[in-house]
Length: 309
Image 1 (cartoon, rainbow, N blue to C red):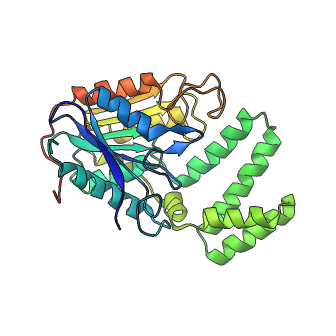
Image 2 (tube, rainbow, N blue to C red; image 1 turned 60 degrees about the vertical axis):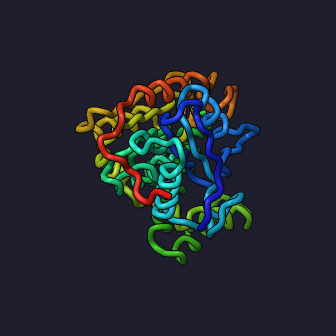
């Protein structure tokens, strides 16, 4: 696999340097989404405030080769490879490096750094320290409630998601049968059923539903910044911030915060809907928090760099 990316260096040699890891779904290196280039904006803003970054196309997408049907272990391996590539660049201090992960990309970050004795700078943006089943059930209910749906509609949809999750963890045939049953009950067309099978049947999704991120999060011994959005409808802010705080309780270099008025993409949202009335992602305020926190970290006691190019 060859990953294609862009390295953006801060003006001063030896500046902190981090590779950016995307969340679920195939993303290009800029995280082009709804007319915005979220990772490009983050990288350019961080460069202006003293931190270098490496961002890359997901495996099997954009300029990167490989099979896009990956597992969470593959994501962590790609994040570790990006970190090693970053370590090998001229002007990069191997004792001031790390990873930034958005959403489930934060889980890849904790796994990648966990394999490096837990060292390295870790910035986790809306990263859930819980299994995918809890995440999917909460975000289904939260989005429907925000859209004004009734309690009965929320309960019905969550029941369907529970059935799909149970079938996914059982077998391919059970997933196919359950999707057909739900489709018949709600009058869904064949396209809807195929989409559910494609989403839930993906190797990554099976990993996500089963994997418990807490042990790898707890294993981080380097600096950790975990940010959650007050108006996030995909990752429950208070519960996940509390879980992260508990998992990192023994790490004196950890910092967990809920950022007021921000949604899942770390943009300022005027109301509780991450798709409506939102400003640029990430917001200047969020970038400032990240940049100032990174600059405040002392050099690592141990480098996470392994295969320096």
